[in-house]
Amino acid sequence: MNKGSRRSNFDVSDSADSPIMPTRYAHESSKMIRSIEKTFYPIIGLIAALIVLAILDITDVVSKYNLLPDKTYDMIITFVATILLVVVAYLLYSLIKSRRTLHLWADVFERNSIKAGITISMSTRSKEQVLRALSETIEGIGEPLREYLSSSPDSYKNLIDVQVHKNTVFDILIDKDHLTNEIPSKVLSNIALPSKSSSATVPERQQQPSKEISDLIEATKGYGTIAAKVINGRISKETVKSFQEALQRYISSSRNKVALALIVGESIDEEADNLSKLRIKGIDYFILIEKTE
Image (cartoon, rainbow, N blue to C red; front, side, top):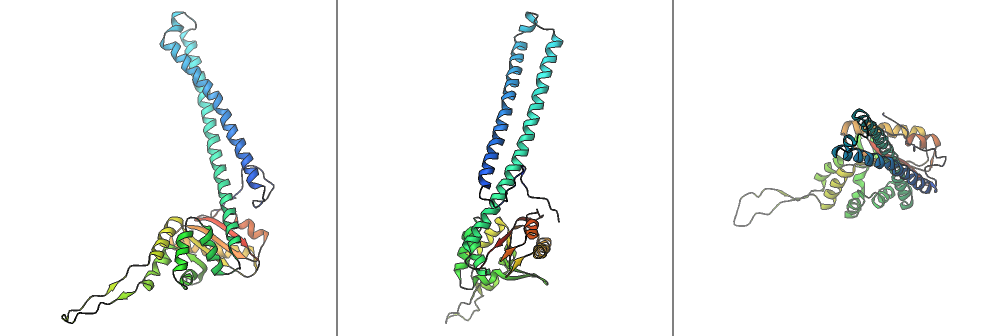
């Protein structure tokens, strides 16, 4: 597994779940933007100096009044251009660093938003409640998932206890491949009765898949796979490792990106929480949710 720590670029002693985190990040963002703004002032000054030197050269003012030797004049232009290049390179470095930091902060906010939304939406720690919470929380797939779950009293059964390998079963799995495989069982066959005046055989005609399942498949293609594990007890380091290994087997065989991986339990060990925050190739968000009943 390719893993790297998900930590901010400035030292924050508070937990990522701290209520003051948005205020701290907003303050740091303001300082970062202000620092980049200050870098523009010397750039503007250097560009203005180059423009003045170019105008003097074009109008032959320097040579006409013999203000400076040509060699000295060229050295001045070269020096100013070199300084400008250095400042622009520094600004580019600052922008790249700031972009990475802001992306990291956006990632943290997204994680916390998903975690808080699912925790609030769940009334009990059950697979059905997790599905309902996902439909109410995940923006990219929420509406099609709600429509699909409400299309039939048993529709949720196609998304729970899904076996993808001989020894790999997900408590909840929402992916385009599995949903596509479910279409044949949802398609009804209509056989047209032959008319009295004709003895010709009428071919079997199949209905199209329901709009709900088609919309959910399309949404899943864009968002990615959602996989969840629901346990009655504490989430340990071993639980996280086991689920990560199952996800890696799934990613390796299906070539699908896992947009969201969840483990829902009664409590969370500190080691498990730290392990879940490591970056894993092929998984956008790996989130542990604590829900007591």
